[in-house]
Image (cartoon, rainbow, N blue to C red):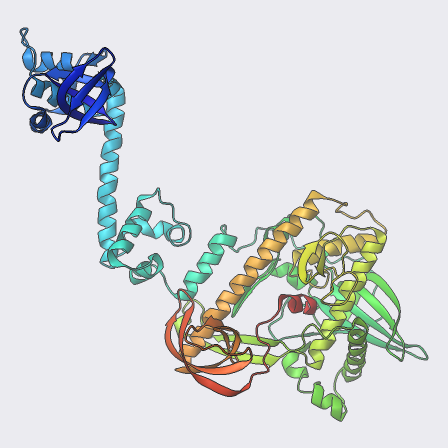
Length: 640
């Protein structure tokens, strides 16, 4: 006697050795013996031999038509053996073991048509459920064919038409449930290329610049960079007009002019120095439509050749400290003694006449370390700049910290051409050593304003967002903690309200404080905490994007100049910084050298999609580069 039984989800046949009420001992064709439960036995038979049953039944099952089988089955639950007797036997003749097993295999292989109800028991699917299931199977079959077709097209460097509307998703956030993503993965496996490289071969990526820029927009500006239709606020007309002749100091491309200065001599006393900060916060309030725009962006985004402003151009134009007009501002006035001590501080909201917008490239040749040592010549605002310079040096000395910009480099990128076709653009990268007199002047005045106003807000108990640095760690906080790196008791960002939301938020708080009004953001305000948290995340993402785009243009410059070798300065281990470029990279072939040693590298590869530069060590150069390199985040904020 032989038995057909189910074990671990599979059908097996064996010779019956012993038969108890609840269990049986069987021997397989291989000679292996096993104990099985009686409930697992599906069929007892005498022929054929156990080793032949499943092979013969499998061949017979292949000839059974599933649709016809479904038509023959009744509507109720049934046993496969009973159904086999009806299907094969008829007229009282039972089905053979091979026939019954063949039917079992056919039923088991058609789960869409027959639902399993127990060991050897089934029920045919109702017509509506079967129709839906068959439609689903057909859809999957068509999808599988589409995936295969799309994968073949991609492998042949042709872009399937289905890809065009969803390229950004496929490139930056692929959904593996979509057939397009599965096709792309299959094509990548077939060609051995990463997704971005394969799509580039198919013409889906207009340029590497476009690839990186679109990734940023997809992640940070999913609804685009355009502004909604919001009304530009009017400049407040009830502000007093300052008795000042203010001027700003910025590079030529700056349009969001946040800060300006004024100097007026006080006979017998010293000077009255004004630090004037643009005041868009006097033109619109929290929760206004314009606030919602600024809150959604949180900062201006900078990149070589372009920027995405936090506020609409019309609003920037209305509140930027442009020459030739009276501009709303929050002003910090310092009474400065002849010894350049600060004897008093006064803060006001007012209209400030802006006499000039000085540009760095024009004023720096006249005002620098050499001309200061030789004695300044006469030029517009030369006396004011000299006074501010001496005040800045005194402020730096009182802080006991070197200037935040000392020893760092600025890299100015000029992109000539149409950014939509970066291959035809020409890039110029100008290196500028920080710590010049103008740098120190602006930096120290901003530190003075941000720390003085941070102290005022803390003293008045007005909630604000501070930048603190303790135990070497810098962070945003609502507590007025010290900033050890700058040597000040408190440091609140207030000097860039046209381009940073935290500064705008703090400006609203400061303006309320100066007017003796209730500040819009209360202590422990969830809106205050949320703005701080979101700003910290977004500001970091924007800065990372800017560094990435600068890296792209550095690679373009190397390609443009036909550079085959580069000199670099060792930072640590095999991490080096290219001389005269803001570009860090790993060069595994560089031997173990002390930081500061200079090396020469051969350029071996350059990838604009991954922004990787492959270099090989050629030799060690004599001397050390004094370049301190990539800008430090804290220095950026202090200058800001």
